[in-house]
Image 1: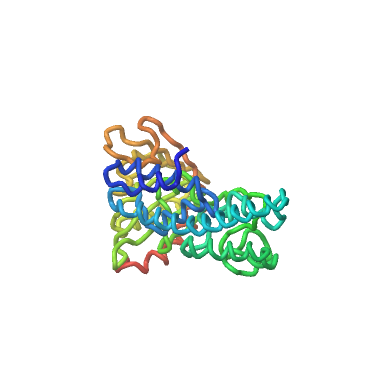
Image 2: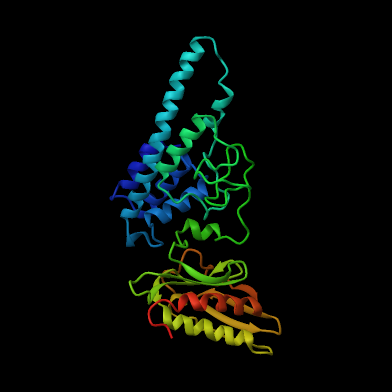
Length: 329
């Protein structure tokens, strides 16, 4: 296994393919992940603004590894001081480390079971705070060492962190699928929407000053349909409004071709409805040049079923939020 300095150098090497530099960043996070690998990866993607298409902003990889190395240097300094102290203690005949040193061997300083919920500060600020708290004995049991918030339950309701030694919890069932987080198709602080990802959800992340353009996304049963490219908001609102109208109309129909707009052009989609459900079937167009990494393999059709009521709820929750952007009518 390569070291962090060697992999960090690869991240910064403009002569390497972007994919190789991304994998080098992954190796760095595998070596040092204060929140656990997935939450730390999500933090770096959001904080550094790593795009889905790396060519759009290659410098984001460098920003990410800079932040990770800054935090790791604090941890490395602490680890070296501990190693030096242990050498002196062993020389004096103390073979076993102290009980209050157990935190130094933990694999995550503040494990966050939900990859999307973690401290938002720069990693170095949180790691510095954690070191100070653990070095002083751990602090009050009802205060989160990662963010300082009083907590009555785990994980911390403010930052999502669990204390050292807590049994790792499973990620929430309704969170963003890991495949999308890995490919940087994450929700940003400006993302708004309605509905549940595990049923049917509408989301928009503005990218222009007036909010008329951005990333529009639909999720059906946890599957993302959009390609995460920048698109105009208004046409997609008409599409989802029409889906809501279909959901509100009694009777069965289809299957019929469904056109969702430019950010969904890589898919061939059909829609069928019965008295209770809306059945989406889709496959990647075989002639499409570069579909998103999370799209189904060409020739493989996926079937996702959403309740009519969930489609209606998603639109009703999302509509007032989306109307704020530009002059949406």
